[in-house]
Structures are given as structure tokens and as C-alpha cells.
Amino acid sequence: MLWSQLQDQAVTLGWDFYLPVIMFVVLCALAVPVWVSIGSAAILMLVMSEALPLSLIGESLFDGIDAFALTAVPLFILTGDVLVRTGLSRKFLDIADALTCWTKGGFGSATVLVCGMFSSISGSDAAGAAAVGRMTISRLVESGYPRPYACALVAAGSCTGILIPPSISYIIIGLVLGISASILFLAAVIPGLTILLSILITNIVMNRLNSYESGGNITVMEWWQNFIKALKSGWYAFIVPGIIFYGIFSGSLTPTEAGATAVVVTIIIGFILGTLKLSDFPDMLLSSAKVNGVILPIIAFSLPLAQVLAILGVPQGFVYSVTSLTESPAILILMMVAILVIAGCVMEATPNIVILAPILKPLAANIGMNEIQFCVMMITALGVGFITPPLGLNLFVVSGLTGESILKIAWRAIPFVFFMMIVVLLIAFVPEISTTMLPEIYK
Image (tube, rainbow, N blue to C red; front, side, top):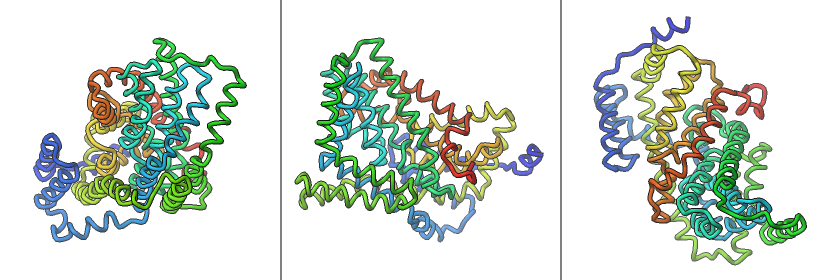
């Protein structure tokens, strides 16, 4: 039955599809901004295929971003920026360091924890890698880590920015596929924490094998005193993530409301501490607007492109082409994971989500994969792509930050990629990892 349905859905794609795709690849290779590349490909595909009147392109662009859920994106970006300017991100580091200093490799573990905390709130892996890298890489080197490894550790830890909720990527994929962002946040908790745990374990293992960082030479009483001292000094930093997580997961706040509340509370804390002034606002708002100005045009142009691809039957054609090669669910899942990791290597999460999610979701549905599980698998695989050598985005961020060779960092990132890929495959093959916390109706 399934095979006959797929045959009925088979489509023949012509130059109205292939030429825009070729142009998109060429423009990206020439370092043309991604939103320009996507927009050019979408307009060319519209003109050649006549799938939609070209006069509707303007309306389609604005309709695509006229969504209440997207309001959360600039709010979380601004929250991350305010956290840095108020010094609260450094308080996260101090508390994490005090928490892990009892063990060998403690500061490396603290760095990973802070990467996960900061990146998930700011919603940007690159921003997390840059912000945490400035605070930790020099200190990691002083603690005994080789600089390339320290860079790889920060790059890997920052990958959790799109994996641990609240995450901008889950908001976007929820918008594209019509799934509640709050439900996706709930589904992503265990997978996101598992990825974070895999990075921690990798660092501990590498530290044991290479004796990078000494530590663990304190008594339980000394550890407790250090932790309580750090907690007293910076407990207020956890008000912000506390509001976000409790508000969203209790259902009392939508992601947008949680983002707005977090911005206000962070600003108030900054004023109380005296680390934020009114004169900081122009630069702070401009910095956040620049990041948001990269994301929203990509979404605006990607949605019309996704509509044209659907009209041309590309998702159905892709499913037919792939299933004509093999009907094995295991092999199809491995193919999807490979596509997503490679896509994560060469392009940011947002365009990958908007373009690939509508194409791959029918394939996932045909092999019986829950749509929530598919979303979590997709975001996690894209996150791994951010540090997959040699093109991972986070590798370039920390390389630019430190001047370290990208190849040296990439070599040190391989163990992290290996253990993170194990988690991706577990998410892909074990639905319970991403559905355990969901209401019964979504399982």
C-alpha cells in the first residue's frame, strides 16, 4: 500500500527546480549572504515554475514573519546580550566552577555547564561560543588545557544553545511545521541534557587520558564552603533562567511572554547592581538588532521557497526517490541524520530548518517516526554539524576569537562529535527519549 502511494506521489523535477538550486549553491559558495541566496533562488523558482504569481512575493514575505511566536526570537537574543553586559554570565561561571572544582577537570566541566546555560538563554550557538570563549579560553589554557582543545571544548559546549530549551530553533521549526513551541521545549529537555552530559563525559575522559587539568585536591568541607560563597555572591543570576524555565514548563507563560519577562528582570537586576546604565541601551539594542536582522530575513525568504517546493511536489518526490533505493527504516534514518549533520556544517540552523524540515518530515512520517521525535532529531543533528570538522560554524567562531588554526581545533573536536553522534542516533532510534515528558496525546 505504502509503495503504491509513493508511486502515485512521484514527480518529475525540471530546470525550474534544478537551476535555482544550482544558483543557491553558487551564491553561498561566493559568500553571498544566506538570505540573499535563498531569496534569489525562491524568486527564480517562482518565475520559472509559475507556481505562484510573482506579485504575491511581497505579501508572502510579510505573512511569513507575521507570527506571534517569532516575537520570542528578538527577546531571547536581547536577554543574552543583557546577561553579558550586566555580568550575570560571569556569575554563572563562578557558581559552575565552585560546583565542579572538587573533581579533576573541574573548570572544563564548569565551562561546558556555562555554555549550555548561556547559549540556551541567548538562543545562539555562535553568540554563546563568543561570549563564553572570551571568559574561559585563556583560563582553560592557564589550567593546563592546550589552546586548540580549549577552543574545541567551548565550541562543543556552545552547540547546546539550540538543543536545550528555550531555543530559537525549536520556535522556528514549530512555526514551520505547525507544532507548539512549548511542546517541543518539553520534548527537548531530556535530549538536550543528554547531549550536555555527553560533552561533560568526553571532557572528563580526555582529561583523564591526557592529564590536562589538575584538581580535586580539596576536602568536602572546602568544596561546600566555596560553593556556598559563590552561590551567595551570584544567586540572583539564576532568577532569569528560573523565570524562563518555570514560566514555560508550568504553562503559565508562553515562550514570548517568558522572553519579555526575562528581558525586563535582567535589566532591573543590572540597574540594581549598577552594571547597566541607560547609555548602554543604544549599543545593546543595536547589537541584538543585528543578530535578529540576520535571522528574520532568512525566515521571510525561506517560507515562500518552502511553499514553492511543496507546490512542485519536491517533498513527495524526495520521499519517492529515497524509498526507491531502500525501504529499510534504519537506513533511511541514517540517511536523514547524515543529511542534517552535513547541512549543519555548511549553513546556519534557521535556513536548514525552514528548507529541510518540510522535505524530510514526510519521509520521517512514512517510516513511522513521531513528528515531535523528528523535530528533536533534526535540531540535535544540526547542532552536531556546528562542530563537525572541517566546516562547523562554532569552529570558525572560536578560531576567529583566538587566532588558533581551524584545523587544530577541528582535530580536537573529533571526540566530542563522536559522543554527540551517539546521542543523535539514540534520539533517532529510541522515541521515548524525546517523548517521555510529553502528554499522552503527543506520543
